[in-house]
Image 1: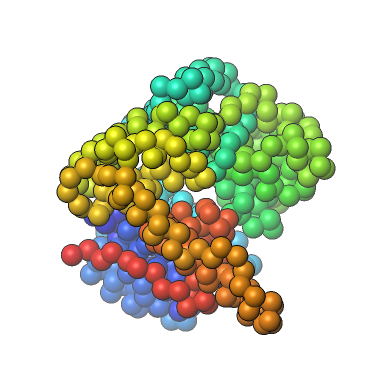
Image 2: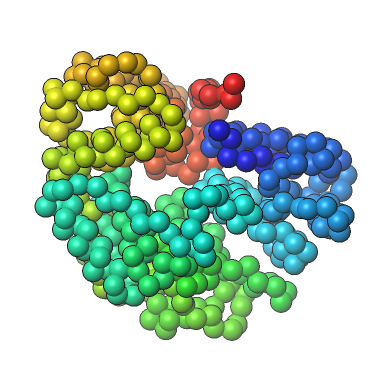
Length: 454
């Protein structure tokens, strides 16, 4: 089922097609055109739920087209402007006219998808959405001592409106824990704003965090967007020294200034930091600001790796099964006792995220009967099919660029197979921002499988 129709208007073919591919991979219907004239036609024909509109186009600029739509009398969906370098002033003007947001080039996939999802959600909340921003309480599954301890820590953290440091390995459920803290806290009616620091270019981070003032107009940053709610700073250890210093100062004063602004803006949100690294070790190594770490870790919640509570594997499988069967209308398949024993004894390097991926993959095969041990081992074998045990000797007898390209191709093909083509999961594993990942895949000649709607 499609998540909505997005009209993409940009005269640069590479950007236009890249955005279209990213949106289609996320199950949106994407209509891409290169000019204002074509945009008018597509707007009437497709009645999009959202428009991504470039500011500079050869036949008519985006501002003029936006004004035309806003003054036309018909209902206009959310319009997000695509802005190049040096066009902040124009982007601010577009928001004054009626645009809901803007995205700056070069495009960040995380920012693009976040803006699209947020704009569509505001425009047409679904039947299951909670009113006034109330968040459903995420489920922390498991009866082990580790999960019992985690639920108690979440409840304790939620009761206190102070910063929280959430640590644990990737895939262990750190972001779910952050949502649970928010959903049980006093700010649960407010928004949850997420900023992935590892996926945000350092030269844009300060503006994304603190916002921008230009020519009397304001573009709020994440700290401001999270007002009355929570700001989740993902992969906090990726923040560079200057940004660490600025964030520390803002938290000490409890206010900040936007880039280009003079008036202090009070901080009115809960800050949660998420890290897969031991920040105390990072402090000792001189890579993280000690005072900032002290402030962020007033409360600490550790999310255990799945190998630390493997007895919860059957409960997790049951939870993923029930939700997937209901959402995708698939047949329920029981895991045999032998299969469950194999899964309990597995090390789970990818943690809960890896388990969920495996369960979904087995269900989507649409086979009948119980899931047996052999079927699980076959799934793992398919994951490992493209994995080289060691670098062949030929790598050392070729130019560095060629060796690197060959390794990257083998690495990405292996993980594409392992994740069954899931680009979001691959981006997390490779620690690459999605825009860069798409370009790398294209540059290495690696195609992507897409499921088309019948």
